[in-house]
Length: 170
Length: 291
Image (cartoon, rainbow over all chains, first blue to last red; front, top):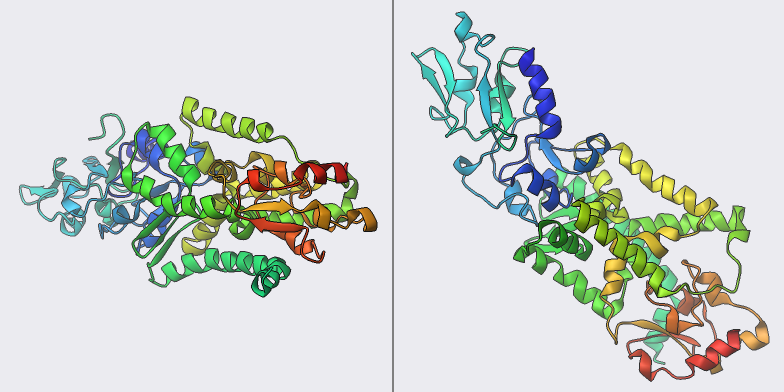
């Protein structure tokens, strides 16, 4: 519950931005709302903020529980303003960092589950299994794609990605 | 005048409508093509990418420089194509492509039916400094408050962006209501105020006007107003300007060519010209003729 509330607050002020995004304040200045990243995204991961987001309207964001970023790395190449830096290696991406809520995470409660561990695109590096059982995030390796949050069988998810740009986020 | 020129002058209206419709087809087609997996053309009228060629609205290049206080070279380069087009032809983006202008022209037709008294002939050309004052305030606001105002109120961008969102991911924001709101104000209170005074996108293009940029030339001796007492050019002007005072048409005129098209006088009293304003003759005479 607390995580869910935190996530809601975090997404309004610090939404998950597409890969390569510069820090939030700079991003708002640099993004010219051209929708190219939205149109090039083959998975429809990138959504567009509308009027209810205030001055952030027209900027791209990713809501990982719906559709996470699959790190195809197409969008950083098409950004005309450098709001998304043109990186090509998915390991360089720092969209956010996943955090595990150990009070609800199934293995910590005694139920076997490896959903996030097995789907993590930085396999066996960003999410490791402590004692072969308990998933743990390695913040230095985590790219913040949100696939773990997307596949978590719990509702609300026990693993949530927070934007790397919020204070204390990374 | 060559036959080719005559042909162009007589069909300017049709050519312009065709271009505008193509632009509308374009803004619907691009998100759909991307939906179907063709990523060769991307973007909206904020910024378009064709193959590897970047085109960015010069107003947004300026805005980004004002906001970030630094120059990002690829962005500067992307503003080059609109800059060259505008240096040669003036604000033709506004009159020949911008989807908001198309909507506003139809709104103006409605306005002429239901509120004809708002504008009376002969039209007068507002002073240029009104235009620059409003544009200057917008730029100052952007620089001082650090708000990307030009992105937020760019009409071509707003419309094409919402169309892209709607066709590509199926969402549409309530900010699109800004467009009908402006149109309603234009119909009932201030005809064509947005394109004429407020739009920062058009104003940035107007800034790029050089001495020999395409302009309207008026040849007073050829004008038959004295005999016929008719002003087809002024009736045709979508911005309610007076082409017979060609000297102070700019920065307002966006070179749509409707007045040139409407002027059916033998040899054309109104012409497009690339010559600098200094070489124009008898402008003063023309002003006397009208007043």
